Length: 309
Image (cartoon, rainbow, N blue to C red; front, top):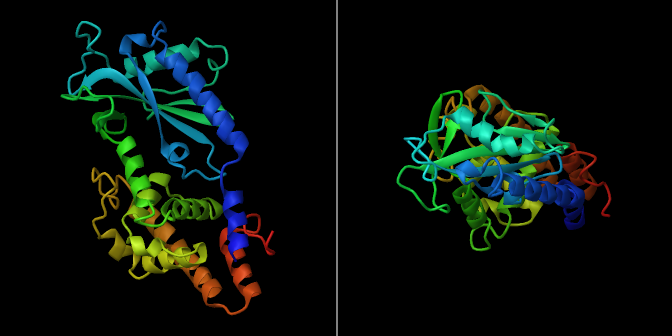
């Protein structure tokens, strides 16, 4: 069913229109924030991309672009290197980074955030999420991580990683590790999440799959999807939840109430059992039509074609 799966992934990937608009809006917003003569220049901001769009794990139902803005401040402590040691609060940082967007006619009515927001959101049909962050005390290199980001629910600055996370996903996807099947597998699981309308954030799916053995990702899509699903149901939901699985950068534990809650994980796991049953039926069937129908039930009529295109 190579042709069927080729069509599935072609259908699953973001459209060229999305990619073009994402690139255009990212560049426009980056130029406004980084403008050396603009209102945000007091923080000497520098931007980079994170998230599914940057990592090439976005699917067609994901329509957001995540921009990290590194401000020339250090936490703990909050002084700016270029402003005579002045300190800036989280709210001041957000207001300063948002100020060039609020002053631009294209964006001023579309900027949304408050004191409880994790990021600054700009809804342009495509959603732009801007995360202001600062340097960790003792670091003066833009390329080094962790940086520090503010968790409004905790009212604390914490370590954060973005480019290291991206680099690790790319490493796991390499020919030597998973033969380029790791990122496509992430897309499949994100698609299943969206197709069945289940609550599971992309970062958690990426972290879970990153922790699984490389050999499970080898083979064609029908093989590695089935192997991954069957591996996950080898143990109960509770057994998995009691396993310490770290996020790729080893900065957090995946199965904790503050990350992937037990109730949310249980709901996801129940669907994994359903998907595994369907994938096993498709993989074990000697009848191509039965296999196609099983994959269609799991992956969706609109995505998996009944006939090879």
